[in-house]
Image 1 (cartoon, rainbow, N blue to C red):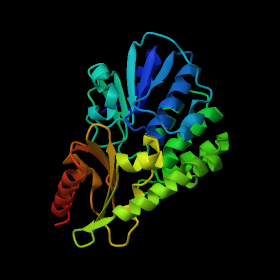
Image 2 (image 1 turned 120 degrees about the horizontal axis):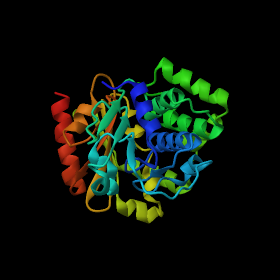
Image 3 (image 1 turned 60 degrees about the vertical axis):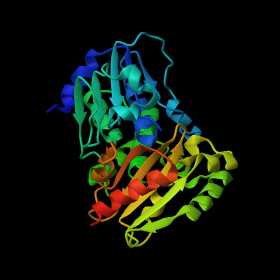
Image 4 (image 1 turned 90 degrees about the vertical axis):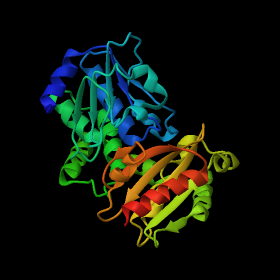
Length: 314
């Protein structure tokens, strides 16, 4: 098994590095990628982040300090990407070319020359934090902002069960460095557009219970987004709604995407394993929070998900 020092040694030998994120980019994949990019650039290396989909505008500050560099890529690194399919639009171009995969999903199955997976890390950003220290990178406020974003968003502002004492220690160190923790948390968890509020109201009307109230399902459709004038990125942040309901063990959020696909976010309570649930559909993640993508109509996809929930909850 690779050690963090091995990952550091590999990266220190690399140059002209492209850093891949997963599709429907969230705070952890973006924060981890841009923090690593900033760290590599500070060491005199050429590096850039390759996105899979357009991030929400609220993440624009993560680019602060990042140099736009033009080079021919010699090395490919993926961060917070749990499976080949999660590369989205970049899958065909990069599969078979990834030199190093860095992730915290125990279900990781990315095709790469080398893989470093730490399932104990609450976020990929925790790994990047330790890795940059191993590489003797000088931490700047910009790097701290990126890493804090990754950790805060992947732990639900430190409320999810993946949060550990080490998570709080790292966050405290990033705060000491000078990250804008107050503004980051406000932007990630407390700021919503009026259209997003209207969407949430519509989503509550889609709520249905199954398995004697132990499974709750909500959904968004492209028609709902179009009616409210919402971008694809603005449907993020809904997955916690069904899990918050008393008695629910499996909360499922379905978000319709172009091409007849639904992005599925699963959040669980108790001993119910979200990762094992999503593996049934080619996805994965963590025990309490995982995801997958399922093709089909709304009714077809919902029926398949509910049938799987019934099996899991027997």
